[in-house]
Every structure is written in C-alpha cells, then in structure tokens.
Amino acid sequence: MNWLDRRPPPPGAAQVDYLDGEFRVKKPGAYVICAATGAQIPLDRLTYWNVDRQEAYANPEAKMLRLKQLGEIK
Image 1 (cartoon, helix red, strand yellow):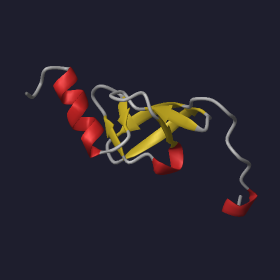
Image 2 (cartoon, one colour; image 1 turned 60 degrees about the vertical axis):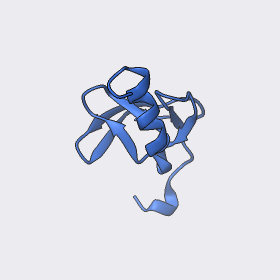
Image 3 (spheres, one colour; image 1 turned 180 degrees about the horizontal axis):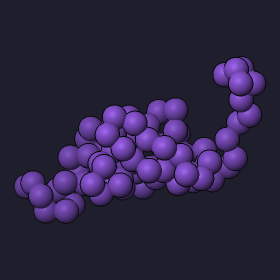
Image 4 (cartoon, one colour; image 1 turned 120 degrees about the vertical axis):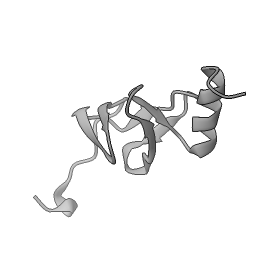
C-alpha cells in the first residue's frame, strides 16, 4: 500500500503500545491523550512518551509537568 492510498484515521482516541523508540497502534484513532495536560496529540505528531508508564506527552514541558504531578521531581 502506498502512503497516498491511506484512509484518514477514524475519529476518537487511539489505543497505543509505547515501545522503545517507536509505538504500535492497537486500535486506530486520530489522536492520543497527553497524560499531563489532557491535550489531544495527533498520532503523526506523537514524539514523547514513557514506556514504563505507557503514557504520551504533548511536548517536553508536559513530560516535566507529569514528573512533578507524580512527585518524582520538585
């Protein structure tokens, strides 16, 4: 299949397995939810996640915010 032949993702949140350096879509969707901010992150913009927690983050600042929320940093 060619990338031009792809159909748009179904609306709603995707279910994703976060792996080291990549992620695997278990259930197609248009976005995932940032664990720190609740923002919708389009899958084609997903860059930051935590493998151990299986969480996505909108950006590096959101990752730091999440660590503060969890009490891992001050």
